Length: 384
Ligand code: NZQ
Ligand code: ZN
Image (cartoon, rainbow, N blue to C red; front, side, top):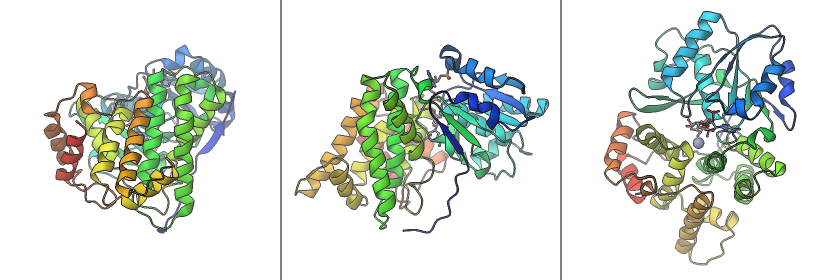
C-alpha cells in the first residue's frame, strides 16, 4: 500500500425529512446565498423546503447555474458574493450546482484573475464556506474538494481541487431523487461506477481493504443501478445508489492506491467540444481505454472479471475480453450508449479531441503517465 494522509471534513446528514436540519447546520448569523440550477428544485418541492429551513436567516438566491457550469455565469455569482458580503454558500442541486458553487467560493476570495485557478492551477488561500443539499447522486462532489468548470468562450472544461472547498455538510435525502429524469439517474450510476474504476482499475499494490471496498461498490451499482430505471419509486434503491455514489468519490477508496483518471480527462474534452453529458463521455471512453490498456492493467482486469463479474474461464485473454464486454453491456443496460457514433460524432472528431487534449496539457495520462497523445488517439479511434 502507498502512504497517505486522509481527512474528510464533510458531515453527511442522510435520510428522509432531513432538509429541515439546514436550520441547525448553517452557522447562526450567516449571510447566505442559495444557489441552484435551471429550476428542477422548484418543481419537486425541494426549494420550498429549503426556503422554510432558511427562515430567520439573512439570505438571497442565485439561479441559472447550467449543467457543466460555466465560468461566465459563476463569475457573475462571485461578483454578487463580494458585493453583498455573503459569508455562507448553499448550493442545492446536482454536481454542476455544487461544483459551480465551489468555484464561486474560491473566485470570490481570489485576488487575481480567477480563471488562473482552473487554467494555471493557481493556489487558493481562502474560500467562502459552503454546505450543500444534493439532488442527483453521481459525482461525489457533496463530500470532496473537486470542482469542474467549463469556459464556453474557449470550449475548455477544467478542474481544480482544494481542501478549502469541501462542503461543511451535505444533506442527502433520497426522496429528492424521485423526480430525476431516467436519463439523469442513469448518468449518475454510470458516473459513480467509473469513479470507482478510476481508483481501482490500475495495478495491484497489495491493498485488499481498498480493493474489496471498491468491488463492493461496483457490485452495488451493478445490482441497484438498473432498479433505478425499473423501480423508480423504490426508496431503498434510491438510498443505496445515493450512498454508493458518495462513497465512490469521497476519497476513501482512493487512499494508498494508484489512480488513473484518464477516462475522465478524455471525457471532459468530449463534453467541452460536443456538449455530451459527463457520464455519456465516460461510457464511451472507459471500455475502449480498458481494451487499449489491457497490458498494463492485466492483473486488475483479471481480478475484476473474476470478482465483480464472476467469470471463471481458464483462458485469461477471453476473461479480460468478457470483463470489458460486461462493462460495456452494463452501461448500455443503463441506457447510456457507448460509441461516439451513437451520439452522431464522426471519426474526424478524433483529431479535434486529440488537439484539445494537447492544448490543455493532457499529454501523460493514466496511473503510469503512459497515455500520451498517440495512445489517447487510439483509445478514441476504438470508441468511434
Ligand atoms: O439545473 P436543474 O434544473 O437543477 O436540473 C438538473 C440538470 O438539468 C437536473 N436535476 C438535478 N437534480 C434533479 C434534477 N432534475 C430533477 N430532479 C432532481 N432531483 O439534472 C440535470 C443534470 O444535473 P448536473 O448537476 O449537471 O448533473 P451531475 O450531478 O451529473 O453533475 C455533472 C457535473 O459534475 C462534474 C461533471 O463534469 C459535470 O460538470 N463532475 C464533478 C466531479 C467532482 N466534483 O468530484 C466529479 C465528476 O467526475 C464530474 O466530472
Ligand atoms: Zn465523473
